[in-house]
Length: 600
Image (spheres, one colour):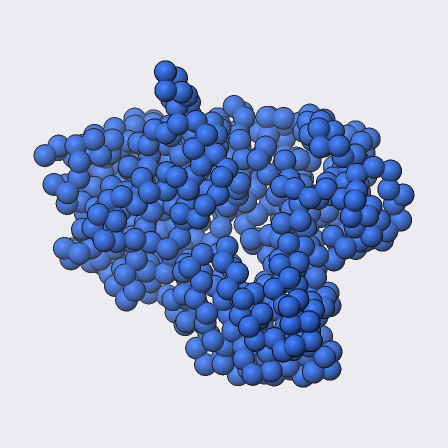
């Protein structure tokens, strides 16, 4: 941890030079991405914390990391000996760090930020919180670069086109739709900076972001053309020609600010200040003026979350592919354990990748596999470190959370399986968590219901046994985009976005006991119409995942009859769907795993 201490000390020297009383590192990139290219892993650089969410605040006398409950255990380990204090937030949406700065900044003080990597809304919120003390926010883009001599360069992944036969809508159709949306809002332009939104809108993909096939870019959509700012060298002539057909012009990535400054504003522009970075937002306001800048949630966010029929069929196919892979993986794992062979968490993750990579139409993993045995699974976002990972033993529980991008869809699946004898507590937690996942999968709810109102359906079996978990129950999944997307979410935090037919969302309650075990069962569920009567229109979920659920660890008498019936139907469907794609040996093995549980 000496290297982290040295970096903090050097930052404090720079803060003195710049006249700052506090420095904030939010760990985002200029596009408000969840998964950031190495160049913008600034939170990790300054703190050593490798989680995907958190804020570091450094003052002359204090250094702190604020992160949510998913990462408390991990952060405590990674910060040990660094001199950085862990501040626990309940939710990723909490802004406790802003409150802390407001309480501790001196009168007339300066709080430094990297305005390229903080959203307009967050910077404005921070400024408002310290205004009463006469303090102000000062933006210095890339301020950590002076401490980071070997900072990675911009990624250079080649750009490729996401075929219309997988997207279901052409880029021309999507642009026409978006321009119609802008017209209803009285706008001629829209500036997009979220990478998944740009990739979806223009049907382009790349390898710029690990596990997320995005192109590092900004896009300015006008009435007749799109100005796309990205590294031109990444575009082949064939790709440029196709984009040109839709009047999409490519400019150097670093010239976005200069281009905005050169525009002659002839109408209103729409931005999403919740995701647009502070520096670019200032440039837009400088050109268009505050009166002609309309802030609101990007309509692209909702549009890409509601999958069309082509996309839904692609997801169905992807989950069949993954079902084949997972059947082969868990069969391999069971045989290795029975033979007494040494298998580490990394070995298991490597084998799963090998099996996936052999599948037709596989592109990449959709996130880093969480391969966690025993107490390591108590960390919801555990990272397997080769050489420091656990050896799987023939007892206890093993959790595997993984996913893939195929040409036609993206998967995310978690299975927790027994590797041998279990304690009664392990079986009880395993059963309760299975009941929780099943209850949400069976849910029927009125049209217009947001995810926050159905979250309790999944938590009911846990709450009745006085158990709970700190993360959300469900997140959206993009189509060959990010494995995490909104705007829908199933979690306790209040959010008024209704669940809509066509939305694909995870169903993943969990139970975590620090130092003992972690259990999570995760399927992917598609929101579908469920009929109409005198009380209104109704919605339900269809489960897309085609990987068996292990029943051997269940305490069946704890379960309700309808839960057992759902489980038997699900496993029977998995068997019937996959049997034609498997060898005779694999079919025989899967038949045992999917055998019906007797209703008590």
